[in-house]
Image 1 (cartoon, rainbow, N blue to C red):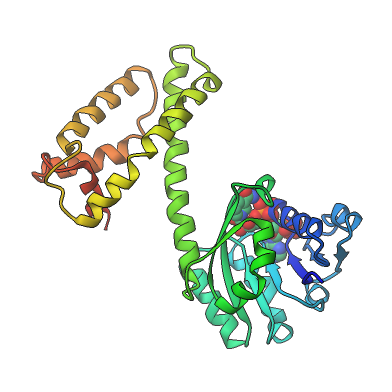
Image 2: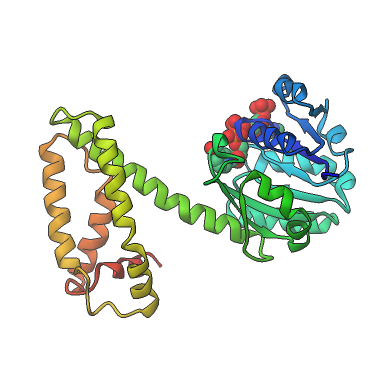
Length: 285
Ligand code: NDP
Protein backbone atom coordinates (compact mmCIF):
# COMPACT_ATOMS: atom_id res chain seq x y z
CA UNK A 1 0.00 0.00 0.00
CA UNK A 2 1.36 3.41 -0.95
CA UNK A 3 2.36 5.82 1.82
CA UNK A 4 -0.14 8.59 2.48
CA UNK A 5 1.31 12.08 2.03
CA UNK A 6 0.18 15.56 3.02
CA UNK A 7 1.06 18.56 0.86
CA UNK A 8 0.89 22.04 2.45
CA UNK A 9 0.89 24.76 -0.21
CA UNK A 10 -0.84 24.48 -3.57
CA UNK A 11 0.97 27.08 -5.62
CA UNK A 12 2.14 26.00 -9.05
CA UNK A 13 4.73 23.70 -7.50
CA UNK A 14 2.57 22.25 -4.73
CA UNK A 15 -0.14 21.41 -7.25
CA UNK A 16 2.35 19.65 -9.52
CA UNK A 17 3.77 17.65 -6.60
CA UNK A 18 0.34 16.66 -5.29
CA UNK A 19 -0.90 15.69 -8.77
CA UNK A 20 2.16 13.49 -9.27
CA UNK A 21 1.69 11.80 -5.90
CA UNK A 22 -1.95 11.09 -6.77
CA UNK A 23 -0.99 9.66 -10.15
CA UNK A 24 1.50 7.45 -8.32
CA UNK A 25 -1.32 6.08 -6.18
CA UNK A 26 -0.49 7.85 -2.92
CA UNK A 27 -3.43 8.83 -0.72
CA UNK A 28 -2.82 12.59 -0.72
CA UNK A 29 -4.18 15.24 1.60
CA UNK A 30 -3.80 18.82 0.44
CA UNK A 31 -4.18 22.27 1.94
CA UNK A 32 -3.67 25.82 0.71
CA UNK A 33 -4.06 29.15 2.54
CA UNK A 34 -6.34 30.58 -0.14
CA UNK A 35 -9.20 28.16 -0.76
CA UNK A 36 -10.13 26.87 -4.20
CA UNK A 37 -6.71 25.73 -5.39
CA UNK A 38 -7.50 22.11 -4.54
CA UNK A 39 -10.46 21.64 -6.90
CA UNK A 40 -8.65 19.70 -9.61
CA UNK A 41 -6.67 17.70 -7.08
CA UNK A 42 -9.84 16.68 -5.23
CA UNK A 43 -11.35 15.64 -8.56
CA UNK A 44 -8.23 13.50 -9.04
CA UNK A 45 -8.76 11.84 -5.65
CA UNK A 46 -7.05 14.12 -3.12
CA UNK A 47 -8.55 14.85 0.27
CA UNK A 48 -8.92 18.61 0.68
CA UNK A 49 -8.33 19.88 4.22
CA UNK A 50 -9.90 23.12 5.43
CA UNK A 51 -6.94 24.00 7.65
CA UNK A 52 -3.26 23.09 7.83
CA UNK A 53 -3.94 21.55 11.25
CA UNK A 54 -6.58 19.29 9.70
CA UNK A 55 -4.25 18.40 6.83
CA UNK A 56 -1.52 17.10 9.12
CA UNK A 57 -4.00 14.82 10.90
CA UNK A 58 -3.46 12.45 7.98
CA UNK A 59 -0.70 9.87 8.35
CA UNK A 60 2.60 10.00 6.53
CA UNK A 61 5.17 12.64 5.76
CA UNK A 62 4.20 16.30 5.43
CA UNK A 63 5.56 17.97 2.32
CA UNK A 64 5.76 21.75 2.69
CA UNK A 65 5.99 23.85 -0.46
CA UNK A 66 5.23 27.45 0.40
CA UNK A 67 6.55 30.81 -0.73
CA UNK A 68 9.56 31.32 1.54
CA UNK A 69 11.12 30.68 4.94
CA UNK A 70 8.75 33.10 6.72
CA UNK A 71 5.65 31.43 5.28
CA UNK A 72 6.94 28.02 6.38
CA UNK A 73 7.25 29.29 9.97
CA UNK A 74 3.88 31.02 9.74
CA UNK A 75 2.22 27.72 8.91
CA UNK A 76 4.33 25.21 10.87
CA UNK A 77 4.86 27.12 14.14
CA UNK A 78 1.27 26.67 15.34
CA UNK A 79 1.45 22.97 14.35
CA UNK A 80 4.69 22.19 16.21
CA UNK A 81 2.92 20.14 18.88
CA UNK A 82 0.93 18.12 16.35
CA UNK A 83 4.00 17.48 14.23
CA UNK A 84 6.09 16.12 17.08
CA UNK A 85 7.26 12.63 16.17
CA UNK A 86 6.33 13.25 12.53
CA UNK A 87 8.37 13.71 9.38
CA UNK A 88 8.47 17.01 7.52
CA UNK A 89 9.95 17.41 4.04
CA UNK A 90 10.38 21.10 3.25
CA UNK A 91 10.70 21.77 -0.48
CA UNK A 92 10.24 25.54 -0.14
CA UNK A 93 13.30 27.37 -1.49
CA UNK A 94 15.18 28.65 1.54
CA UNK A 95 18.74 29.86 1.99
CA UNK A 96 21.13 27.37 3.66
CA UNK A 97 21.06 29.19 7.02
CA UNK A 98 17.27 29.26 6.90
CA UNK A 99 17.17 25.51 6.23
CA UNK A 100 19.51 24.96 9.19
CA UNK A 101 17.34 27.18 11.35
CA UNK A 102 14.24 25.20 10.36
CA UNK A 103 16.05 21.93 11.08
CA UNK A 104 17.02 23.20 14.55
CA UNK A 105 13.45 24.41 15.15
CA UNK A 106 12.14 21.00 14.07
CA UNK A 107 14.63 19.13 16.27
CA UNK A 108 13.51 21.27 19.20
CA UNK A 109 9.97 19.98 18.66
CA UNK A 110 10.87 16.34 18.00
CA UNK A 111 10.14 16.69 14.29
CA UNK A 112 12.27 14.76 11.80
CA UNK A 113 13.24 17.32 9.12
CA UNK A 114 14.41 16.82 5.56
CA UNK A 115 15.14 19.85 3.39
CA UNK A 116 14.93 19.77 -0.38
CA UNK A 117 15.79 22.03 -3.30
CA UNK A 118 13.69 21.50 -6.40
CA UNK A 119 15.72 21.66 -9.62
CA UNK A 120 12.73 21.82 -11.94
CA UNK A 121 9.77 23.92 -12.95
CA UNK A 122 6.31 22.57 -12.11
CA UNK A 123 5.67 21.04 -15.55
CA UNK A 124 8.83 18.93 -15.15
CA UNK A 125 7.70 17.28 -11.90
CA UNK A 126 7.32 13.53 -12.36
CA UNK A 127 9.14 13.76 -15.71
CA UNK A 128 12.67 12.78 -16.67
CA UNK A 129 15.10 15.68 -16.23
CA UNK A 130 13.64 16.91 -12.95
CA UNK A 131 15.70 16.47 -9.82
CA UNK A 132 15.32 17.34 -6.17
CA UNK A 133 18.37 17.71 -3.93
CA UNK A 134 17.96 16.69 -0.29
CA UNK A 135 19.81 17.07 2.99
CA UNK A 136 18.89 16.81 6.65
CA UNK A 137 17.31 13.70 8.13
CA UNK A 138 18.63 10.57 6.44
CA UNK A 139 15.90 8.56 8.16
CA UNK A 140 13.22 10.58 6.37
CA UNK A 141 15.05 10.33 3.06
CA UNK A 142 15.60 6.58 3.32
CA UNK A 143 12.06 5.86 4.45
CA UNK A 144 10.42 7.86 1.67
CA UNK A 145 13.00 7.44 -1.07
CA UNK A 146 10.58 5.66 -3.40
CA UNK A 147 7.91 8.31 -2.96
CA UNK A 148 10.45 11.08 -3.52
CA UNK A 149 11.73 9.39 -6.69
CA UNK A 150 8.21 9.61 -8.05
CA UNK A 151 8.43 13.40 -7.94
CA UNK A 152 11.91 13.77 -9.44
CA UNK A 153 15.30 12.07 -9.41
CA UNK A 154 16.38 12.29 -5.78
CA UNK A 155 19.84 12.82 -4.35
CA UNK A 156 20.84 13.04 -0.68
CA UNK A 157 23.90 15.03 0.39
CA UNK A 158 24.18 14.57 4.14
CA UNK A 159 22.69 15.46 7.50
CA UNK A 160 23.51 19.19 7.32
CA UNK A 161 20.08 20.55 6.34
CA UNK A 162 21.72 23.52 4.59
CA UNK A 163 23.62 21.43 2.05
CA UNK A 164 20.83 20.84 -0.44
CA UNK A 165 20.06 24.53 -0.51
CA UNK A 166 23.74 25.38 -1.02
CA UNK A 167 23.83 23.10 -4.07
CA UNK A 168 20.50 24.50 -5.24
CA UNK A 169 21.54 28.15 -5.02
CA UNK A 170 25.04 27.50 -6.42
CA UNK A 171 23.41 25.93 -9.47
CA UNK A 172 20.83 28.71 -9.71
CA UNK A 173 23.58 31.35 -9.61
CA UNK A 174 25.04 29.75 -12.73
CA UNK A 175 21.61 29.52 -14.30
CA UNK A 176 20.90 33.21 -13.77
CA UNK A 177 24.29 34.11 -15.24
CA UNK A 178 23.45 32.02 -18.29
CA UNK A 179 19.97 33.51 -18.68
CA UNK A 180 21.36 37.02 -18.21
CA UNK A 181 23.99 36.31 -20.83
CA UNK A 182 21.27 35.22 -23.23
CA UNK A 183 19.29 38.43 -22.62
CA UNK A 184 22.44 40.43 -23.27
CA UNK A 185 23.18 38.55 -26.49
CA UNK A 186 19.59 38.80 -27.66
CA UNK A 187 19.68 42.57 -27.05
CA UNK A 188 22.80 42.85 -29.20
CA UNK A 189 21.21 40.75 -31.95
CA UNK A 190 18.05 42.88 -31.85
CA UNK A 191 20.23 45.86 -32.82
CA UNK A 192 20.94 44.10 -36.13
CA UNK A 193 17.37 42.96 -36.65
CA UNK A 194 17.70 39.32 -35.53
CA UNK A 195 14.88 38.00 -33.36
CA UNK A 196 15.49 36.53 -29.94
CA UNK A 197 13.87 33.31 -31.12
CA UNK A 198 16.27 32.97 -34.01
CA UNK A 199 19.22 33.71 -31.73
CA UNK A 200 18.02 31.28 -29.04
CA UNK A 201 18.82 28.03 -30.89
CA UNK A 202 22.32 29.21 -31.71
CA UNK A 203 22.87 30.42 -28.14
CA UNK A 204 21.63 27.11 -26.68
CA UNK A 205 24.11 25.02 -28.67
CA UNK A 206 26.95 27.46 -27.90
CA UNK A 207 26.24 27.42 -24.17
CA UNK A 208 26.04 23.61 -24.29
CA UNK A 209 29.41 23.44 -26.06
CA UNK A 210 31.00 25.86 -23.58
CA UNK A 211 29.66 23.86 -20.64
CA UNK A 212 32.17 21.19 -21.67
CA UNK A 213 34.87 23.53 -20.29
CA UNK A 214 33.62 23.23 -16.72
CA UNK A 215 35.38 19.97 -15.75
CA UNK A 216 38.73 21.41 -16.91
CA UNK A 217 38.14 24.56 -14.85
CA UNK A 218 37.17 22.36 -11.91
CA UNK A 219 40.45 20.44 -12.14
CA UNK A 220 42.51 23.64 -12.38
CA UNK A 221 40.73 25.27 -9.45
CA UNK A 222 41.07 22.17 -7.27
CA UNK A 223 44.76 21.91 -8.21
CA UNK A 224 45.22 25.57 -7.24
CA UNK A 225 47.84 26.18 -9.96
CA UNK A 226 46.89 28.99 -12.33
CA UNK A 227 50.31 29.31 -13.98
CA UNK A 228 49.64 27.23 -17.14
CA UNK A 229 46.59 28.93 -18.58
CA UNK A 230 44.13 27.40 -21.05
CA UNK A 231 43.50 31.08 -21.69
CA UNK A 232 45.04 33.85 -19.65
CA UNK A 233 43.36 36.71 -17.86
CA UNK A 234 45.11 39.06 -20.35
CA UNK A 235 43.39 37.17 -23.19
CA UNK A 236 40.00 37.43 -21.50
CA UNK A 237 40.57 41.11 -20.68
CA UNK A 238 41.05 41.83 -24.38
CA UNK A 239 37.89 39.85 -25.17
CA UNK A 240 35.81 41.62 -22.53
CA UNK A 241 37.10 45.03 -23.62
CA UNK A 242 36.00 44.23 -27.19
CA UNK A 243 32.64 42.83 -26.08
CA UNK A 244 32.04 45.91 -23.94
CA UNK A 245 32.81 48.19 -26.89
CA UNK A 246 30.56 46.16 -29.23
CA UNK A 247 27.82 46.24 -26.62
CA UNK A 248 27.98 50.03 -26.26
CA UNK A 249 28.14 50.43 -30.05
CA UNK A 250 24.96 48.35 -30.33
CA UNK A 251 23.26 50.71 -27.87
CA UNK A 252 22.96 47.93 -25.31
CA UNK A 253 23.58 48.44 -21.59
CA UNK A 254 26.75 46.86 -20.24
CA UNK A 255 25.21 45.87 -16.90
CA UNK A 256 25.46 42.19 -17.59
CA UNK A 257 29.09 41.99 -18.72
CA UNK A 258 30.37 44.64 -16.30
CA UNK A 259 30.78 42.34 -13.26
CA UNK A 260 32.91 39.73 -15.02
CA UNK A 261 34.90 42.48 -16.75
CA UNK A 262 35.54 44.11 -13.37
CA UNK A 263 36.75 40.83 -11.89
CA UNK A 264 39.16 40.31 -14.77
CA UNK A 265 40.38 43.93 -14.84
CA UNK A 266 41.10 43.82 -11.11
CA UNK A 267 43.25 40.71 -11.44
CA UNK A 268 45.15 42.12 -14.41
CA UNK A 269 45.74 45.37 -12.47
CA UNK A 270 47.07 43.29 -9.58
CA UNK A 271 49.63 41.66 -11.89
CA UNK A 272 47.89 38.33 -12.56
CA UNK A 273 47.37 38.87 -16.31
CA UNK A 274 49.42 35.85 -17.35
CA UNK A 275 47.44 33.55 -15.06
CA UNK A 276 44.63 31.22 -16.04
CA UNK A 277 41.13 32.79 -16.18
CA UNK A 278 39.82 30.25 -13.62
CA UNK A 279 41.83 32.19 -11.02
CA UNK A 280 38.75 34.43 -10.96
CA UNK A 281 37.30 32.17 -8.25
CA UNK A 282 40.04 33.44 -5.91
CA UNK A 283 38.59 36.96 -6.25
CA UNK A 284 35.27 35.68 -4.96
CA UNK A 285 36.27 33.79 -1.85
P1 NDP B 1 3.51 30.13 -5.99
O1 NDP B 1 3.74 31.58 -5.91
O2 NDP B 1 2.76 29.55 -7.14
O3 NDP B 1 2.78 29.64 -4.66
C1 NDP B 1 3.17 30.11 -3.40
C2 NDP B 1 2.45 29.30 -2.35
O4 NDP B 1 2.83 29.77 -1.07
C3 NDP B 1 0.94 29.43 -2.44
O5 NDP B 1 0.39 28.19 -2.07
C4 NDP B 1 0.67 30.50 -1.40
O6 NDP B 1 -0.63 30.43 -0.87
C5 NDP B 1 1.66 30.10 -0.36
N1 NDP B 1 1.97 31.15 0.61
C6 NDP B 1 2.66 32.29 0.40
N2 NDP B 1 2.76 32.98 1.55
C7 NDP B 1 2.11 32.25 2.49
C8 NDP B 1 1.87 32.44 3.87
N3 NDP B 1 2.34 33.50 4.54
N4 NDP B 1 1.18 31.48 4.50
C9 NDP B 1 0.72 30.40 3.84
N5 NDP B 1 0.91 30.17 2.54
C10 NDP B 1 1.61 31.09 1.88
O7 NDP B 1 4.94 29.45 -5.85
P2 NDP B 1 5.40 28.01 -6.32
O8 NDP B 1 4.39 26.99 -5.98
O9 NDP B 1 5.90 28.09 -7.72
O10 NDP B 1 6.69 27.84 -5.41
C11 NDP B 1 6.63 27.29 -4.12
C12 NDP B 1 8.06 27.04 -3.66
O11 NDP B 1 8.68 26.16 -4.58
C13 NDP B 1 8.90 28.32 -3.59
O12 NDP B 1 9.72 28.29 -2.47
C14 NDP B 1 9.70 28.22 -4.86
O13 NDP B 1 10.94 28.90 -4.74
C15 NDP B 1 9.90 26.73 -4.99
N6 NDP B 1 10.24 26.37 -6.35
C16 NDP B 1 9.43 26.75 -7.38
C17 NDP B 1 9.81 26.52 -8.68
C18 NDP B 1 8.96 26.96 -9.81
O14 NDP B 1 9.43 26.89 -10.95
N7 NDP B 1 7.73 27.37 -9.60
C19 NDP B 1 11.09 25.86 -8.99
C20 NDP B 1 11.83 25.43 -7.84
C21 NDP B 1 11.42 25.72 -6.58
P3 NDP B 1 -1.82 31.36 -1.47
O15 NDP B 1 -2.37 30.57 -2.63
O16 NDP B 1 -2.75 31.45 -0.34
O17 NDP B 1 -1.21 32.67 -1.87
